[in-house]
Image 1 (tube, rainbow, N blue to C red):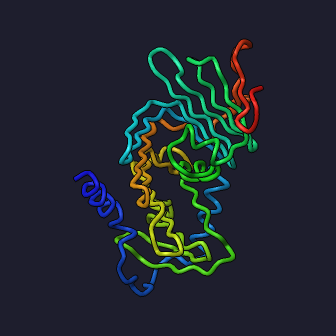
Image 2: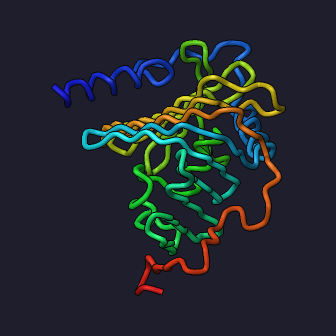
Image 3: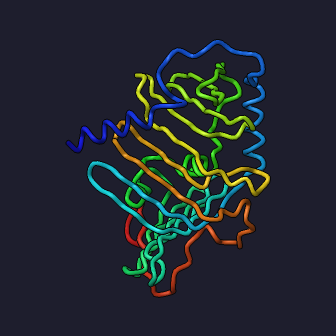
Length: 259
């Protein structure tokens, strides 16, 4: 029953922009490939980072988590996720310039190492790199300028699709050329990542989704991030994306022996 429910959820999430059906022929007024790629490039230039209070919900066949976070990301590879409770921080994860740290106050321990998939996997349930975490939160999917691309309409959204040796990537845009959905497909034609952006905050110069849903169909994982009052391009203090625990904190090297 549980696997059937998971399969049904996957089918629902893959409807809409990424439904598997023949693409209609281009119509007058459709944005060009150049316009869509230029809109993404401009968004990447205008949207450097975000900070917000957020609720993270994660579900998989094996587990379910729900946590309140103070999160911040900054291009290209800076993140800070602080899991908070009424008693204070439970866990602080940071990444900056290829280095990763996880501070666990209850253990009086900070774990440090390279910002590798292996080190992140112990603390982040989803298998994505730091750079992709930043791009997912900012809705700035990396579409290549030097690859052929196709543009079509899909249920009121305009979609650009690119193929390479690793599979395909597709991004759907609203009428103002704001990314609304993003999908990745492997060479076997299987959807590996399906992201949806909803509840757009249009109060700033760069619209930002307050609700992000990322589905990983191959592993039946679902991640939902709900942000409250996101702050666009915040002026963050030096060292914000690093951990400076109390002097008596034990330090452990994730890539070698105990420090």
